[in-house]
Image (cartoon, rainbow, N blue to C red; front, side):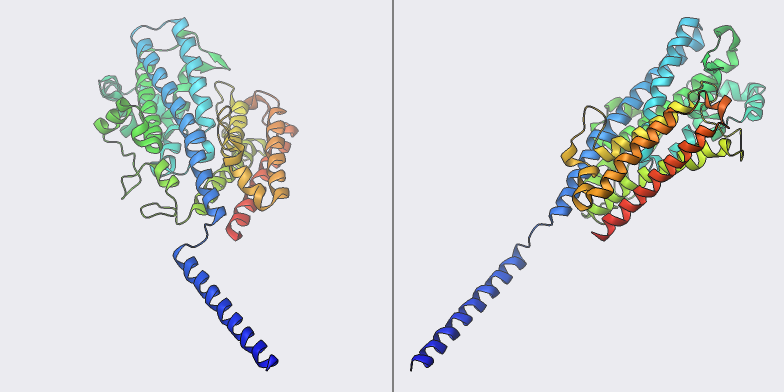
Amino acid sequence: MKRTFIRLCMAVAVTAMAFAFASCKDENKDNPPEDTSDKTAAVVASQFVDHAVAPTYTALAERAEQLASQLAALKATPTQTGLEEACNTFLAAREEWEKSEAFLFGAAGDFGIDPHIDSWPLDEDAFATLMNSPAMLAALDAEDGDVVAGERLGNALLGFHGIEYILFADGHAKNVSDITASQWTYVAAVAGDLRNRCYQLEVGWLGGKAPASHIAKLDDIELAYTVAGSGNSYGDNMKNAGQAGSTYMSRKAAVMAIVQGCSDIADEVGSSKIYSAWHGEDITYIESPYSHMSITDFHNNIVSIQNAYLGGVEGQRDDSKSVHAFVKDINSSLDARVITAINNALAKIDAMPAPFVQHYADAANGEAVEACNALSEVLDEVIETIRKN
């Protein structure tokens, strides 16, 4: 009797537990536990957009706008003081652009902005032909000269390096008397196009948060700035990763895209920007040769990686919302290797003898190549680690 009672009690208890377990399972179907990693990835993407991309492109658009205004004024009335001020503005704009190269995906890639404003070396033969074309110079001198430049000049005559070629020589501002009226016409039009493309980057990522005048300019000259087929800004596209309408299938995919951008520019600095001239493959393939700012460009490219990985530009970083924190939570030793690789790449680049255009064959440049390649490789490991977790 006692055993029968005990068995009956056990049966009732098991049935009750099964019912409770089944109830919990049904409840979990309706309210599944939140994926903490996925939630963190969303925070990382938002931090990246708002505190790495947005301030960089905002500053770039402001500097490019200022430069276009200064060169338009110099075209009318050239002065040495004005030229030197324009050179300083050029370098400030250049700094922001180089600090954006870790995120050349999105608007920069989809609209072909990178090759449009940052191709080198300058095609000096094409430039000479242009200077001897009254019809083309007249078109560049017209009110819509900025649009004419963007549509009719090739990439090797556009952007930063076309402007640099006119303003600088041997690392310094030229003597204003050495710049001809035709060259002022050319550089003012190219600067206008540069401004327009920097607006396109800014509005592309910020959408309606960008200045209304910048949006109006793009609409006026019919430059696209939204993600194709959606009408969304690139910032919202990334913030809404994993949701309907976003090109990112998941929030982790957005984080991987950030890291991929970092890996790509680390590889480009090491394997192309430094290596091509240092190894003798192409000694003309030297970025910023007229201003002698090549090494500064390389340094700022690595800073762009630092800003993207650490969760924002200096002064706007939040360690708890960064790719750095995301990776550290998965694999702390891998994250430590990334931080070390970033710092080492910066140190090796800063140790390169300047100007690069005069010291491109120096052995120290090889150490910088190795450091940048090592950084790219460890970032590739990060991508695979995120993919598997």
